[in-house]
Image 1 (spheres, rainbow, N blue to C red):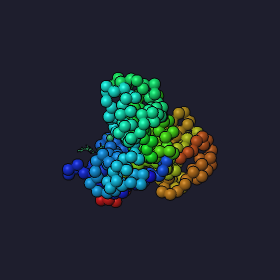
Image 2: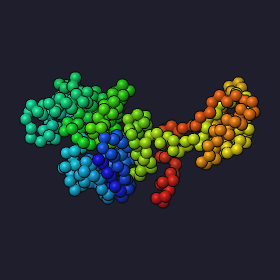
Image 3: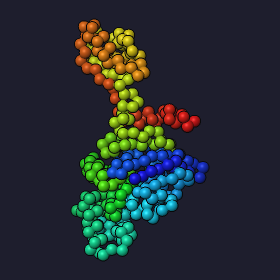
Image 4: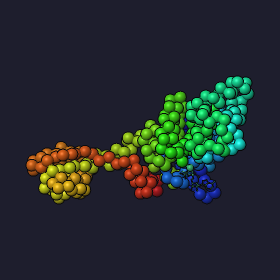
Length: 318
Ligand SMILES: Nc1ncnc2c1ncn2[C@@H]1O[C@H](COP(=O)(O)OP(=O)(O)OP(=O)(O)O)[C@@H](O)[C@H]1O
Ligand SMILES: [Mg+2]
């Protein structure tokens, strides 16, 4: 439904988006994750035909956004970082105005229905007659979503849809976005990690204009450390040296001690599952094995690792 290939965007000499490629399947929600200045908004502006790319191609709903910008736009709804509202118009007036632009010639009654549907989907119907300028930030964001939805587009491109919302509104907006998937293909940008793990099937992590990882949130959390590190809790006089002496263990660090309970972080040699050996060694010594589990990296840790260290994928590019 969306295919981006070798997309590059330069602002003068500065490269904001550098050779970015990814695909989004129909009905999928893709999270576009990256720190401030990573190039998320720039990529989205190119995808929505708001701005030309310097190099590369982007196809949205079967239309090349450079060769067929009008067709591509017809199939795309865009929530920009700041929803472009007119403060003096009521929500209904504003959406009717947007509807006239986006829906083309249509009877007033039919257009009114489309406005009602968009308001209902975005949960702003209770504010239909409120001036846009008097809405709270969360409602402004929802009206922005309603204007993106009004022509029932195949593709939704949402730039930080939950930015500035309170926790309750964040949950509501996430539910709303999830309910839209399936019928709509969605890209949303965020720098909030729980957002992608809770809302998105796949994540593209972008840093300094480059893609540093593409995967499911689950695979990402397995990928980097995965089963290679174990959390082990022992009841007994165990020491890090004793644990490190077990076959296949590369390193052991004591992390916590409460009375006779000691916790260790155990790092295995590459591609080696040491769980059985560790369990046996502990039990053989007569200690109690209270807990043994793979340590998964949180998405936060992965994000930090990918966006602060030299990542192998980046290194390959030189
Ligand atoms: N019109 C512009 N002219 C020059 N540089 C720009 C322009 N717009 C963005 N940039 C630069 O391009 C880079 C990427 O910006 P972009 O807005 O795409 O980042 P972002 O990932 O959306 O960040 P944020 O999380 O802060 O919204 C930044 O370094 C920014 O300063
Ligand atoms: Mg941005």
